[in-house]
Image (cartoon, rainbow, N blue to C red; front, side, top):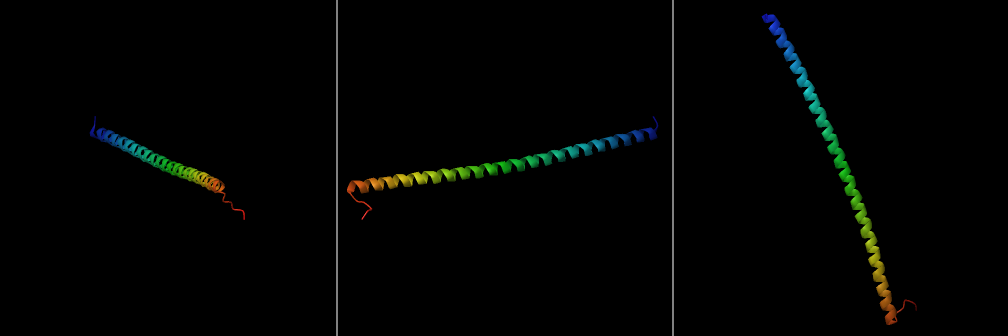
Length: 89
């Protein structure tokens, strides 16, 4: 094989290798971008879930507070009734 043919083959191999390297680099970039998007979506979902849990907890505490208030008022009314204290004048 002549040296010109060898140089041509070497050039072809180099071009093929460079193309494959660029293709692989682009694939890695695409994978990284996809991973970044998925991470952002997961973070958003976690944030929404946390907010929903916070809202549910607040509602539960509100309801529990109202129940305790009602029980306490009933106890006061019972004690007043037992002692003969009425709010009527």
